[in-house]
Image (cartoon, rainbow, N blue to C red; front, side, top):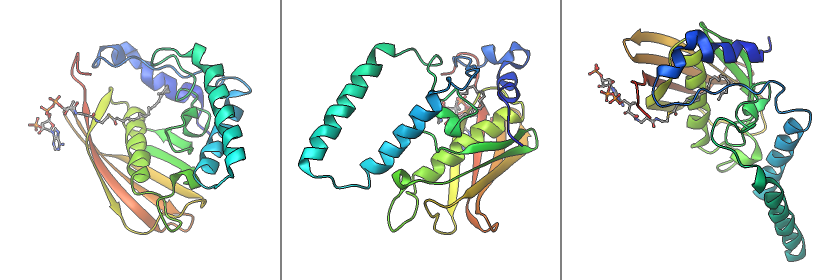
Length: 219
Ligand SMILES: CCCCC/C=C\C/C=C\C/C=C\C/C=C\CCCC(=O)SCCNC(=O)CCNC(=O)[C@H](O)C(C)(C)COP(=O)(O)OP(=O)(O)OC[C@H]1O[C@@H](n2cnc3c(N)ncnc32)[C@H](O)[C@@H]1OP(=O)(O)O
């Protein structure tokens, strides 16, 4: 089942309580996932990232690529906005919410019983010998833990610790799934676990985290 914009943004705005937790701005989802060309733009950028780490162009091609990269940066530079107003990261119907930092995964389940997301690690995420870079897994888990916290209805929280067990090699360009849920709540503390699996259900990595609800004024 595909998660709607309303599902996620209602959690953030629930009861207005979120305004009071920490110094965090309230993030609102972008209604239309940034419009018809935003998803296309982000996917194009990801493909460029994949190619930037997997090609060895001759000097004349590199000179053209550098010029085009500089031209693209100059095109976008006048449109910088403060945190919370940018399109990327708030387009929750897009893979990775349209953020180039996040893994481009798609949330399929988002409720109090847990969150499930599917996707692939791309060439851009490769560490060595066809395996995802070890640092990209905690990124995926941390984002999951954040979403699980929200889906459970907990106020804005930060990761106090995050532990990942690498059980098997995580291959790139292979459809995978990550699932997790809140295991236990103790005051400000939310304990969460999640598992990254292949299409046959083999666990490639599992993780656990402590998320702490921010106190008023905490950054
Ligand atoms: C963008 C969306 C647009 C709209 C779409 C809508 C919805 C989107 C939905 C979801 C959004 C999705 C994802 C969100 C994504 C990601 C979330 C990621 C979150 C992060 O990625 S955030 C960055 C990394 N994170 C930090 O940058 C934290 C730095 N840090 C601190 O800010 C402090 O450290 C803090 C505040 C954590 C705690 O500080 P503090 O002073 O308030 O609390 P204190 O230390 O007193 O601890 C209280 C009790 O926790 C115990 N405790 C503490 N730490 C522990 C540890 N490590 N291990 C074991 N126990 C621990 C103590 O022992 C004590 O326990 P006790 O009470 O029993 O004595």
